[in-house]
Length: 257
Image (cartoon, rainbow, N blue to C red; front, side, top):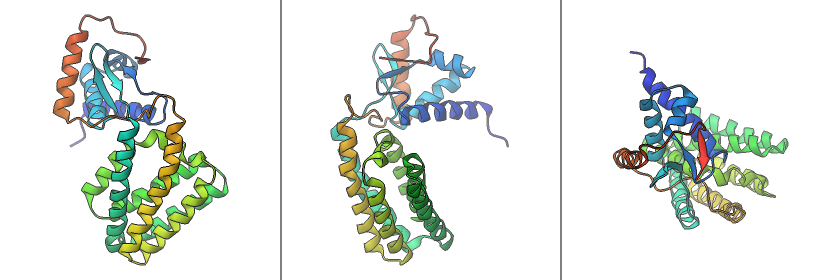
């Protein structure tokens, strides 16, 4: 049975807004107007609302009284706390991958490492960032633990914006390549403890660079806020819609709060 067009539309809206948020095009506090989404994507209220609920559940959007849906922010203490969790989860994924990763994915991981080296040779930070994400995601999948992989992807998504500048920092790509090689060798050799140590060291090494990136941002980290369940998000959105009822819709898709 083909997927519902309504679901496809909500996914399309979610993906577009997600890309704008994680790229920094939409900064923390930017208002996302539901009517404007309907006009922009030429859809009814249902898919626009569903897209907002999905973004709320992912922690990328929150609701503010008398403003409605806005791009969520993440405080420095929250970001540091997430980084500590990320380090342990990434380490676990590497450990499990050393034990479980199928031969096909081991080859893919080696190719992803080479793609990182190729990007580094071109001195292309954006290309390196994409290759780096692929390297890590192969390890997520190689853990053969879907819950772990899903949690890591969700956390990476929420932390994506400040990480965009990570590989622009002097020496970070060079250090990242060395750390990747340590992770790769440990996984290919099936050394679980070494894989865990190499990956946690890799994430910890990047932590200082993350801190520098955060320090350069004048208004905190414009990524996300604590994740709300779909039910909580729906209730919050309904409350703000009732509060905003009677307000004339804006013609723009977003505006700063």
